[in-house]
Length: 438
Image (tube, rainbow, N blue to C red; front, side):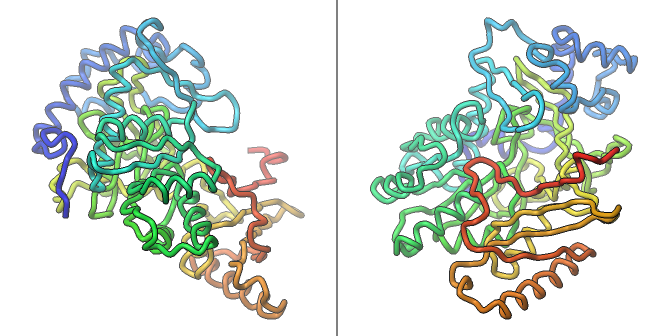
């Protein structure tokens, strides 16, 4: 156990003090937003709520939600709460559809965000003696800049690699003795694969920990990566709308991510009704940024489905924990009337010894949903006879049916034939969308 904290007084604050701090910050933030963001003021006015109505944390329920559609609507400056001259940077979502979300930052916003990322690095045992290799994308995407800043604050030697160029990643990792790896879980798995292909064993590298986020991943995938890189693998969570990674992070318990509650207030709601659910319920995660200046979102709906639990943690942190997101309220596919999340499919693949390189294709033929999953074979299985391959497809199909309740058609394809992505992998192709009338 390495009970170290980057900001001990905040991270181990008694719960009643956390609540008191959140209440003070919330009242101030609602006033700040009401006075400076016309878009949100109009939403509040429509609901008949004023800043004076927000006296306790519980009063947050009176405030309107914000969604990604609101941010598209208000693009580019409609959600800005400070003068543009006070902003020093934008970041933007890696989203591929429609208008992108553009988030603004004052220098103070960046400092607080980097503090959150520094907490995540210290939580996995990082300090000034570490070499932190950041291979999240840099630029508009928040992954690179966030962990880069956090690594600097901790005092690690920072390798600002960005994503891709695996050859160079491996060269620097080995030559400069990287000890902490920050990237997407799918890229970590790919680096593990690539090291093995070059004849390296897990004990040949100096890595001890990995901070992996920006994509859903399962416990099975965690164990896989830990084995192939000889590390402990930790989860980190965040989104551009709330600043970026570091909204929450795992400690050495690896049983969920502590939310930085001095900066973010979390709620779980019923995605259908918007009603706030009691602690321990599964629902959609909603965040309020308590002290962001330039882009302070109140009650932002993340679309991530998860559970919040406040239990005593062996790491000594008092912050509430969120489970790994269990899918997205908007990622959820309804296939033949059944709710299916890509993360469930990934879990089955990993449990059955496959790498998480897959693609889901959904279509509608003669008014019936078709459901196909292409899965890459492992290199060592590629030489199997067609008969063996057919049997493997059948076994995988049965495992999927057990998990999902419906039968997909499984197609084992040659290794490396599903496009690798250095950002977020495209896992779902839903052809119904083009001619679906919702």
